[in-house]
Length: 174
Image (cartoon, rainbow, N blue to C red; front, side):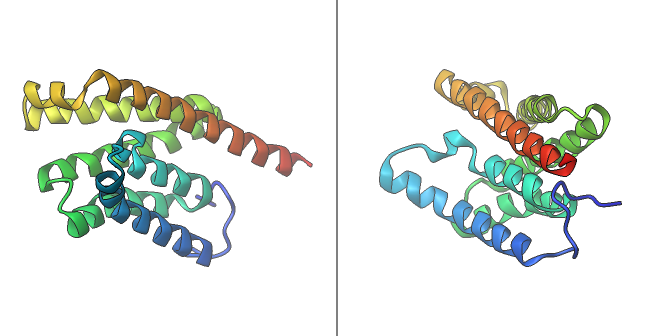
């Protein structure tokens, strides 16, 4: 069974490797971009953005690998996120990936699958923050501007997923 949304002929394609390298480079540059520009780039959730691009353009296994590798590489290069928070982010991205594929297989509705997987993974993440850290940490992480930006990013990524997969379905019908 093909586990890629876009069919691949090899488990690791050149396209997957190139897109992974771009994703890793982007994640490594986010702290510097934020620092130099004064813009909190993390508001656009760069790891989730790179993960969803991998989900849409690569293998399922590649998406799971990036869910683990992106936070780890970010920590190794920039020291952020801290190890415990890195583990929570890894878990969140893994839940996001798993739930998206599960929901898409059961519903065949890309927008709902992506929207639900992001929202549930965020709830999972903040629940882990509450258990691992404290309510004060969750309140600090969940400022109004940050929550609004996450809502907008979630909707945008869900729309992109819908448009991308709808176009793919149209091509396969023709």
